[in-house]
Image 1 (cartoon, rainbow, N blue to C red):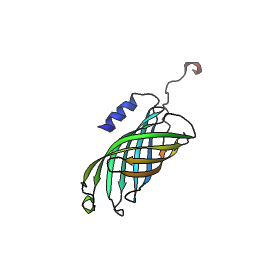
Image 2 (spheres, helix red, strand yellow):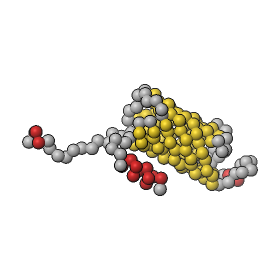
Image 3 (cartoon, rainbow, N blue to C red):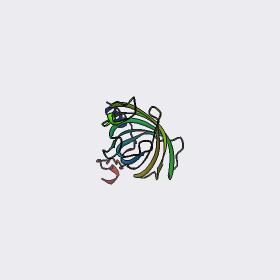
Length: 164
């Protein structure tokens, strides 16, 4: 439902930037490495909506997968480096929750995250780095990745009357 809502919202606006990206992450508390994918769309120049998924493989202490939606807000625009704050929520499935010593461990969880990040080079390819904090489970995560924003050029098929 969220994806349909976002797609409809972006199709109604003319000059919306939509990008796709991948990332790698490190959870500081569980010492777990993972990777993810995301889609980002700018509603206005300073506000974007990010739909993302993340997977932490079995070689870690924690084996989990989650997906969610968040907002990124960059109050100041700069073409080289731009800082932003982020807030959002995800649904998490924790495969090996039974192996945990955590007394409230369960397989399906809601995760809220707040944090901040930096995005570099306001071009088609944009590297980023983020710090995220989960206030419910008191976890921190560092994420680094790259976004690709294709140039959506609408071609006009009509011929200009001046050149007929």
